[in-house]
Length: 631
Image (spheres, rainbow, N blue to C red):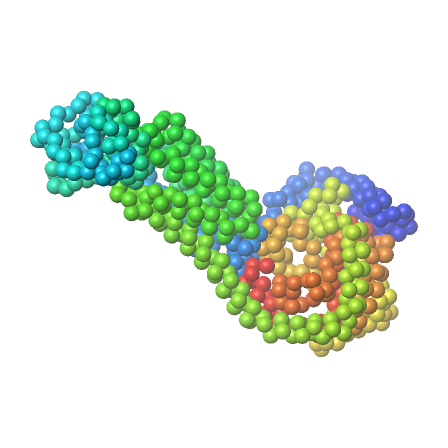
């Protein structure tokens, strides 16, 4: 839009304050870019697509970018990157896991689809007391009668026998029933049974089958018998009726079907590369299941099923918390709480597991087995993932340990010799850090300050930015005894910035622009896929013999009226943890040149002792370490 020399004049000649200069520049740039867009409008009408209007449809971060950004990262470390779910969804191992869970849900839906029929071929009914209200021996149990019904009509009993705590009713023939009842005795309430179970003698199979309990968990068309305490009526001669019906079965089936549909859709999104849609469906699945299970628990309570011993509302409410916690941990906070999500979910499933573990059940769905499988998967994930991550990090640290020891040795040496100067440098950084804007984002060249969303926008005008940065590097280095890598083909050779400035920088081996593949990696692994957060695409470095020269260079940069310092990272201080950099240390400065204020560049100020340890082999080891932690 504007010629470069006009941009420099705008930044230098009319200087009032850095902020006023930036605002004036941006207004000028916006007018120029508006004229440029107007001139481009005719081209768009002639069939040539306007790049500014279509950047989202070209090369923004998509599923292929997510795959490219994490394909060299270790499997366990994917859950530590900034987009863990989308990264995991590109891997076949996680796709198979989701598909297996979806198939398990489909199997559950198939088994639980048909309603539970009435009990048939019943010849006898056996009632066994486990605990009395007063705490005396169950053999002292007193009830007036027990019996069964079919469609509200009592079925006659031919014979009743009592042996201790067991009461058996013999029908004398094969009958079918859909409800059983218990009449309290006329004796003391202390002899009422409060824990008990009921069994059928199936004439067809010749076996006793448990069909009722003082407390149970009704799920789909099955019952899990818990034998908890029942609130037996204290009214004498009161009839307690227990029906073979789960009034929340359809809603429970809807919960399972929703999980099945969402998981299957998420797997399809992973296979087709639509990971962003998969993440949306993942969050929607959690919200939907939270609402459905909460509704299911509330409905069970409002219908009063707990009064008949059905405590299904408790597991349903726990399952609603299961989905809510998972959504909060993964859907909102992303990588920091992925492992915690597995552990919280395991704890919640364990609460349900205590209802179902080792309990007898009746029906086609074995709830206890399902909870056992779910608990094993979540517990394995919650324990194995962090252990595997720790193991991979330890292996990577072993690989990079030689470099780490060298850097630490150099750091100990220079720190003991120049400790006071490092403290002065840290104080200088703190003083200037307050004036930094901290707006470390790459913007579009147009005046609306929209963040970059495509690689094309991110790499636009980088050649001009590189030339301007190199010119400033030579100026700052010449004023602070800085050095640069020489273009001699030999490692460890340097040229003074003052000499390089006199020759126009021809002797300098300048840093290349960051590769696009690494930009995508960094955006996905660290910045949540936000390309505008990658601020070291255009970068240069200055090497110094003394710590004081680094401080002098920093002062030169800060007082330069043609730049705006965005952020300063002082890694040459004992408070910095060099674990993430494998021991390497320097001072990083992100800044904007007022002639191109939409673009952020990076300047590295390095002590020669650290720079001398750099090597291609060491860099390869660091890349392997970086992949192991998905950084």
